[in-house]
Length: 176
Length: 185
Image 1 (cartoon, rainbow over the protein chains, first blue to last red):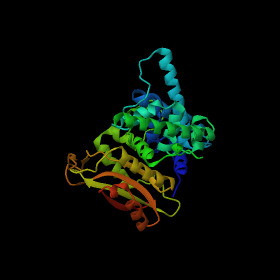
Image 2 (image 1 turned 180 degrees about the vertical axis):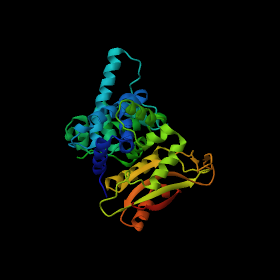
Image 3 (image 1 turned 135 degrees about the horizontal axis):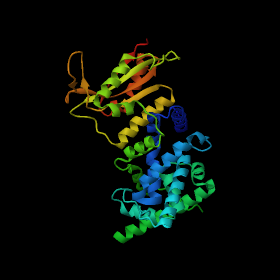
Image 4 (image 1 turned 90 degrees about the horizontal axis):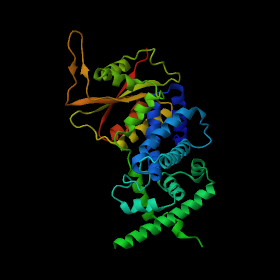
């Protein structure tokens, strides 16, 4: 069975050779949901789609420089993280009226307690929790994506899980 | 002592699993592709041909594939034949759509592509027409079995082509797949 990274490498090579939509469409289907969910965690509902678009524009422009040192998805998340940071700076600098704070209503449907608990996490802890426990990234991939050491990723994950559990338990007690 | 609160227990895992069901917003894909085309980051493809020339283009694209114009489709160099997989479903009761199903098709196709077995694949619009010499085009029927897409795959034998087709999500979700060998010219 072909590995996910083999498939990505094949599609990237074919896109670089032909620039065709069919290759990109498969890359989009494989990675956009992950990118969108990551952006929801950083910038909320209103801006997550904008971040997704900007991420792909930058990714396709820079794809010839992608050397495969990290997985493609880790590389894409790094680009998305930069886009989110720039959006926050632009909002602060220009006082643009784009709500960029989570919680994202599109997260988790009606599960408001889960959404609120995630929103209360420190940003780094939330990133690591989402990438590891929701998207299945390894700590090495998270390290490449967020420019942190794998050891830091592990400790942030432990912290995030502990905080999530505390938040969800206190939420349950409030509604009991 | 190992702190169990750091672990991912079943309850937290189940809660987080719900986040994976978050879909892209409506029209997100359309906006993305329009922007990438406008920025010159996506070249034209058969999809562009279909969009630009309207419903008849879908029929024309299929006819081109079936005619097997040699200069469009170079003969395979590894002894494998090319097979056309026609995706069939009932026009009045189409398969349910949705982002999850599109992802399934995409992942199946990506796996074939990575193995060097996929040459092409497109979804076809339901509207179209049939024409013959001396007649005006007849719109496709809105009931009965209709072709809703196709894949061109490479296989070492008819049995292998059937096995590939059998793995296609289209079959799993209630559609039918017709498998036809493309005669080399």
